Length: 288
Ligand code: 13P
Image 1 (cartoon, rainbow, N blue to C red):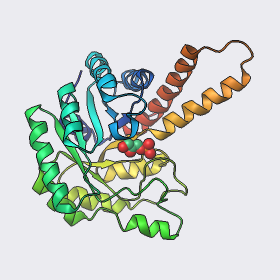
Image 2 (cartoon, helix red, strand yellow):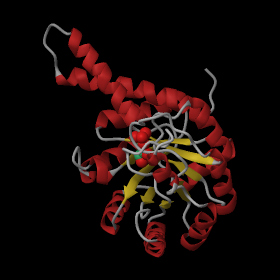
Image 3 (cartoon, rainbow, N blue to C red):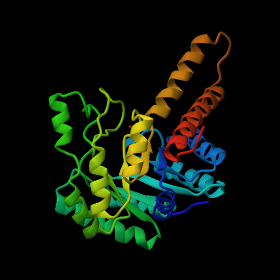
Image 4 (cartoon, rainbow, N blue to C red):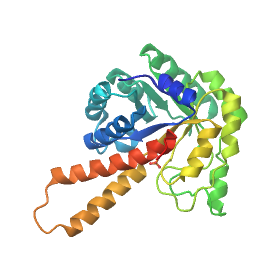
């Protein structure tokens, strides 16, 4: 069953949990996300980061598959565009039926980010979709958020300012806000050190659900603390792809006979599903 980003975040708010937002780049990935969510009976967001992943599969190919599979799912699912960077991309996702759009104008000057985000909110409303936007910057993948180096300062300088975030949320009418408080995309070079208090301040001042990007590599304890402070959507991808890759590498090293791609695809799918189930248990606060 497909529902909007706003509706799925309302479920998160009512239950004091965070909805997992897993990126997909293949049909096996979509099966892994929906299979994990159905097995645990949890709502989930399946998302496509067109800018980063279009080289693996175009949105015009994977988008209709995401929609068809989400439609048949036994749990509430939001089909979401991750890090939309142009109106054309946003329009394409909306035409495909996506029910959530992230517009990422975080690298633009403030006024331009506000104007573009507002335009995306108006466009998405015509399709019944809701909008996540970003203020502050998650930093480059190479920057670690801890370690006491110059890199730490570089990232901390980009942390989301709660007052500016409140102004941004009011001026744009967004449904969710992606914030910078110490997470980065991809592999962490050092143990991440999160500014968890900042999340509470942002949540209180903006009145909208907070989104954490860069979930891979964050400890379960930190996830729980962030959820307590108001994080309601957590983006997670790199570790599921990494663990699946490592499992395939190890199994191939032991294979002596013929190896078929369809089997490799299934190994990858099952590994990703396991990672997603482990993750969903933490985000949904399930025991065991
Ligand atoms: P990771 O790949 O670091 O888990 O982050 C995913 C993400 O934030 C997508 O927007």
